[in-house]
Length: 203
Image (cartoon, rainbow, N blue to C red; front, side, top):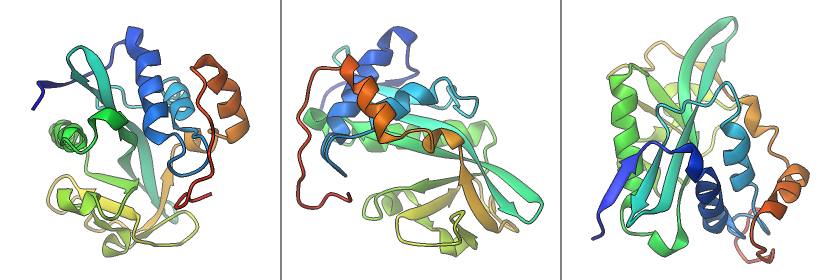
């Protein structure tokens, strides 16, 4: 196994991280992708948590990233601050080598040490439960639209981290700002990759 280094991202690596993210998501959920643009705009948003976010390096190359941002749960006027992450991605050439798990475990431990109480995500329901994530209906938490489904998951970073918490989950508005038109324009900064409509895509 390669020597995997998990560390904070340097500003001089921003483009490299975004290009890796593009390769990881391209044509995965839809023709093309928006995630590399999300990485770009997230860094400039006040909700971005740079001290938690990490990259994975192998042989001097950025091969993965996980990016955290502030989120919260609202129950009437009661607000509980939590965190979320996304994207978490690995360069296609380095997938299925445990690098994503190392990024996740490393940053979850840092988040615990910094006193964050819980993480809520939208993610692959076949992947995240192995790290302790549970569907959010287990915590009496729904999406902002009042919905629950398998891909909407959470984890307490300390025992009882979500005790007494219920309500609707809200993530940063930066995710709403990541639209396809802006992403297409920003994508012109990167080497061309063809958009393809493939079986299994969400859209």
